[in-house]
Image 1 (cartoon, rainbow, N blue to C red):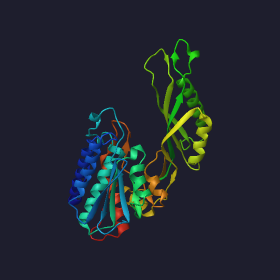
Image 2 (tube, one colour):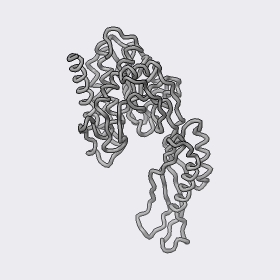
Image 3 (cartoon, helix red, strand yellow):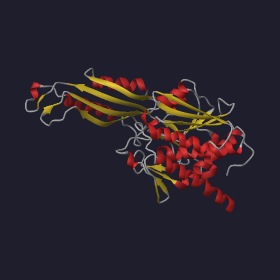
Image 4 (cartoon, rainbow, N blue to C red):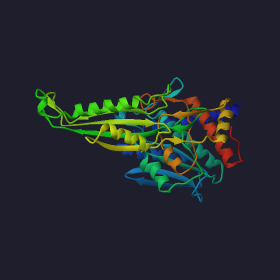
Length: 379
């Protein structure tokens, strides 16, 4: 038992250390040096394990890294994580700290702890076994839609595999089986400027836009028929004008909205609803569109969760969206679960340290059994 406890201690130290070093990198969309450093950090972490091929890809300036066993172009299992995080006010806020059994910092739960866990698992299995059919894929644009990362690599058939473990949803002993679809839109309204004391001489673009936004929200409120939020939603996330004077009517205004919708709603239906409400005077730019995702839980992964956690896992639905949609479109099974995390997309985002070890053991047990590895036994 002492040997097992020491093994767990060493394993957890390696995972937490890598997590903290990743959090310290402000790997957001506009910090390309930090993004590249995160990929190099993962490459360096696994490189002492032998018998695999490292491939770097780039689409629209977005880098990705795919590591596969030598001679295996289609691994049976692909471990997937993204290294990017959302933008905060300053790069200085990207700092990791440990307190109350948690690692705290931007990206701790979404998803640098999961990236560290998968990198450690990949390294250990490839160190202990000769070319297991296990790959590792790290992308850097999930927070901005994923089109140049997972969308490109799977959509263009650059990457293929038997199944994917993507720990970007669910929770410890919870497996995501459904995700809402998403629309990220920027709405533009045009008018005519004038002095604010004589509003009848102009055309207030902001007033026009606000009226349409109110109508849009009212329309989605009509669809709220589930006490747990499993219905379409419309969130206004920003409003802007080119105005810098309090006594001027703005000739231009814009707003960003985040639309989410579960099955059976489809993208075309939701899009038409929005266009009908906004009318021809509001221009719509789309930065992300995604259909809802429905996933089948893997019975073996569910069994591994129960063996490690001591109770049967729950199947859950997620209001968020992830890169899993690009993989599901290819008909490739996706497993979505993760450690205990909280305060996602905030500066004090956190991951529970003990749950990181449990999640590692769940994934380890699943990979061993799925690949039929016999040389050593997962705990």
